Structure formats: C-alpha cells, structure tokens
Length: 65
Image 1: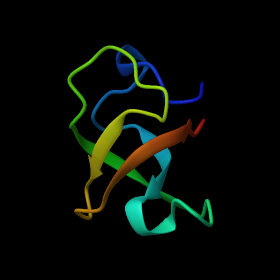
Image 2 (image 1 turned 120 degrees about the vertical axis):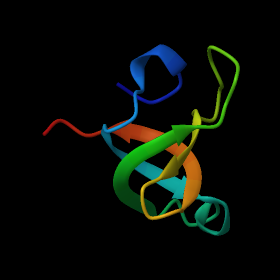
Image 3 (image 1 turned 120 degrees about the horizontal axis):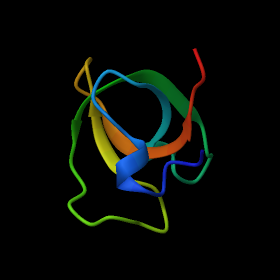
Image 4 (image 1 turned 180 degrees about the vertical axis):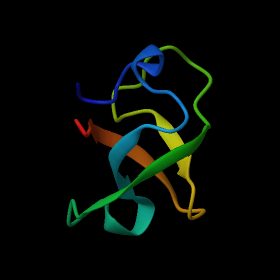
C-alpha cells in the first residue's frame, strides 16, 4: 500500500513518511500514526499524518509488521 488512500491508514499503524524538509531528497522517516490530518479520501502525494513523536509528513508507504 502506498499511503495515497485515507481509508488504508489508521491510528497506531507503522508507516514511512516524508517530512516537508526532506521532500527534495526523498528521505523517509518511520513512525506510528497518531492523527490523520488530510480530510479528503485520496491525495496524489500521500495522506498527511502526525506521528506519535509529533513529526508531520505525507505517508509514502505502510509498513508490514
């Protein structure tokens, strides 16, 4: 799953996100979803989430744990 559909993402899931400052490099940050910030059902760049550590970014992949 690529993180572009809101219904695929739930609080507590392990995901890899790209932070705003890392968009050019594409560096991914792993964490656990605390809040889903995007209201629309789909987003072409990924659903925006807040991780439990407070970082905000767009989901690039959902990790299988």
